[in-house]
Amino acid sequence: MAGLPALVLLLALVSPVSAGLYTDSCGMVWTDTSIIFERDNETAYNEELMASYAPIMANLTGEVPDFSNMSWSDAFRETCAYMEERYAFTEWRGVDWDLLYATYAPGIADAEKNRDNAAYYRTLREFAYAIPDGHVMVLSPDDFGAKYADIGGGYGFVVARLDTGKVIVTYVAEGSGAEKAGIRFGDEVVSWNGRPVGEAIDATSIIWTPVKPSTTEGVLLQKQRFLTRAPVGAGATVGIAGPGDSVPRTVNLTAAEDGYDTLARTSIFLGREANDGAAGSGAELKAMITNETVTTRTLSGGIVYIAVYEEDIHNTYQPFKAAVKGAIADRAPGIVIDLRFNRGGDDNLAAALAAWFVDRPVFYEYGTMYDPGTGEFAPLWESWSEPRPDRYEGPVAVLVSPYTISSGEGLPKVFAESGTGAIVSWYGTNGAFGIETLGPVLPPGIMTAFPAGASLDENGRIQVDSNASMVGGVAPTVRVPLDADTLARAMAGEDVQLTYAVGWIEAQAGNGTAEPSQKAAPGWIIPLVAIVSLAVWLGRR
Image 1 (cartoon, rainbow, N blue to C red):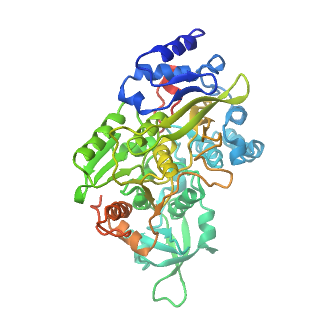
Image 2: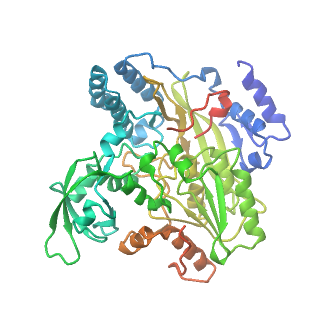
Image 3: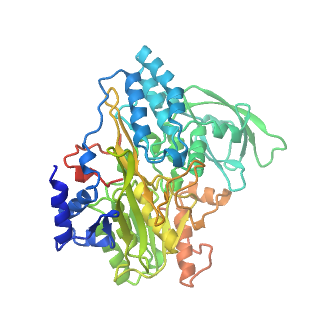
């Protein structure tokens, strides 16, 4: 391996199919990321990725620490120390590693003493979720029954907080105790187990959401969804105020097994029903939604809809390109790009997708990575979105959600910075944009992952990743109202966010107003493959 970086550097500089240029100042520079994928040569790309890591290559082992033969407590202590050394956002997010260890080490020790795998895994998830970063994860094929024990029961209804701050009922399960108690859509929930409902929502645990939120609004969304989850048989006393009630009434409910129905019903932010309660990870949820990386269809009026589920270097660029070229050939009046469930992938690919729509070069990122030899974060690459000469020049609306994570946030970032198109949603993106790596292996084989590198803007500042105030991600430029009307329509099966995206496109074409004029049709882990080559893993999110 000692001579590989020099060889790769030579190849990167002289190869006629090279898309990047290596520089001493910031590693590899891709001034036009679309060239990488237009040439459709993965071997050449991997060579360039390897070249980008030349400054720190000698200090990388390519292997993750294996603490699986240690005691649970020792492995947890060593994992905390390893992450503290290498985590890219300790200062940015205000992470206090000593406090985290002091908070969760006793739970690990108790679980180990009692040989309680469920309590052990639950505590590990609580630790990970105490760090507001969707890239900090524990990954296990088995939750040891902990999830079902915690949230296997539902109270037969769900709630949502409106833009006004009011919390209302948005769904009541047929035949449930909630329905029998007379709870109806639109009823206001004022209290929960003797506490104001806002306090109860704030106190709700969300450690079982498969896509971990990184921003305040993402956390609030999940807390609302998980408020009505509990162990089977648990009771809740709910204060309800119906439209005709002069004073709130009290309803006593018991959580019943429902196959995570209330979580499935509250996945409307994805524009579809998806039972993420039954999914153990984003990868499992993606498999529930589709086996494709890109899907496309034509909406009424000729608007082209393109959904992108991940930035996969094998299977994303060419079908996306074909869909955009088809829209150009058909003179489509607009394009909707749906990234509401996009779990990321390759950074340069996200920049390349954006290149089909921007009208000027847009800086994408400086990519950094921790160098174990220096203890610093080294800049390894620079990338840009260069306008495609045959780009689409019509209006483009991008749909996002808190499940738009990692490099899935790249295209919205470029749009927001360049003023391209519109970002349409109830919520912003996840706010986890760092460069993720595998972390230590814990007993009995539980994997960890965290970002050991950051994405920096043109001024060298961290971008997109949420900060210590949990502000981050890419916010909508057209924020869809969260009110009784939009929620009722969504619960009835309409993809309301898509309706607003179509309405925005129509307005740009002069065929409508800023409000939507036509309803659109209703519409265990990250695969832990063997690290055969360091180049395959490095640089991926």
